[in-house]
Length: 405
Image (cartoon, rainbow, N blue to C red):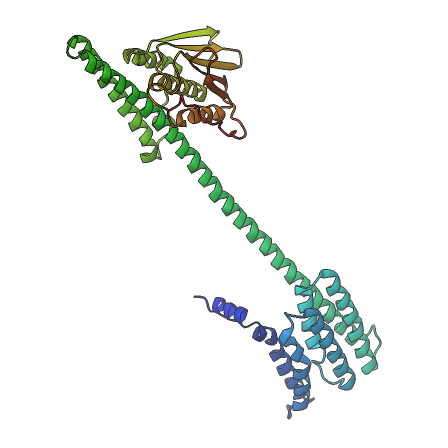
């Protein structure tokens, strides 16, 4: 580890030592200054060093009470300048106090104290050295006080700038993590919807066709064989769609279009044929003028029809189902109506199917309504935009009906 890093950490844990450190060079300079003669070195004035050390004593708590330390050191420095004009380091402790006040205190207070201290130091120096207040020595003392305050403010500004930059970096990291988590959640929910739709639909068909085969096996083996063939076809289709969906998790570097199972409305006839083979009569009607749809809209419409047919067959004991695709200039209206009785006799569902329908519609900017019909049966109505226009935020899903997977 870097020695400077270790040193800074140690000082951070021992703040009183860090506050007192600047006093060490001040005392050394004061003592060395008294040992310099006109022609040679001589014995230093140790008493001057003691007085300088005493004037620096308040610096030990400068970071805790910067204003009080600045005023006390200023008073001590002015006293030393008046009593011992020969001490070159007399105002040094006050300069450190001014710097500390400027770097830790308020801007207005720091400059008021700094300017007042500069005027006082320059005036006392001029009075004790028989010099004009605008003389060279007085102006140097004045400039030292102003420079100490300016340096403290510059350090304060730099610290604040670094803190703001670090805060922005931390915020960006948090937002990046939140966005990544949101995307993962959205992808997980989308895959869950696909898996639900694929499994619920195909397993429902397989179950229905297996029942037909079991019923016909003894008296009509040819028809039972045909039902078994449909079971084989639906099982293969389910495996293909499951493999494509799970591929989303296994091949993250592939292009999205090569990974996702994307059935379209052109595949609706095959879907309906499978339901008819399972014993559910389905009628499909298309009204309006068909227009090109966004791929997301086509997938959503297909999945909604698939889920509605699955619910009708599995939960509603329906004997007839009508699917209507109404093409408008800006909206595709999908209506699936059955004549069944919700929840009988095959039992209630979990409601995940209807939730999935609504989530799919919201993603593309559409809506779904579902519920029992006044005259009996169940109806699902979806309004989907022709072009992809996602909604700003999904609305809470209503409580699921009993007639739902």
